Length: 257
Image (cartoon, rainbow, N blue to C red):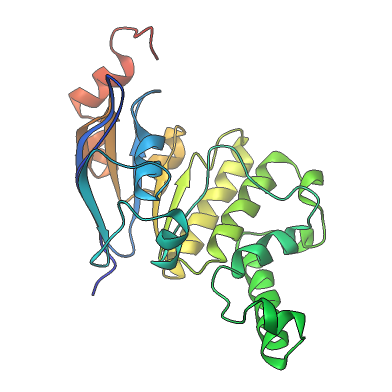
């Protein structure tokens, strides 16, 4: 079955606030799709619902034919979906390599007993996990920082490290929440190259992002949210000219935003 993410009628309320309002869209295998919108549009809440951190009030979201909504985050990961967060969540005292190794353990099959008894299977899995961590650090351009503690890495590199750790779970679908936040122009250009490399390695990407230059550069299609609802969807060249999108970003000031 093809690796399509099919989001249908997803709704999430917090009391009287409708944070995500009947949102539907598809993400096809091999795409880079962006979700954009003004502050408070519901973008991160949508990601939280899709990845098991929030429970929806209505709707469905299937990936490769399997329902994601209502599953715990760890089960979503086992279905081939990984994500990053607006604020990096790294193990500060661990090295870059060790942080990525943590991600690989989500898919190793040898248990605690095998590791404790130092059985050959556990050794083999640990070696393969280490090699995979090194491959992913090369993929995101952090090979030279392999042994640097996360706490000692600048903000832009920490963003890349969190992406590498998410990739360590071997996802087929990667959801990135504001990966360019706080990056300078050079770092953002480097991030674009990383996203292309990830896509070329067979991973479909959905990215929530405020940096419109990055969004217009890397996206095949864009979904635009405003006040929780989808107001537009299409390729970048059409989204740039869409009157509803222009109004959402440039219209009357909204004190809530």
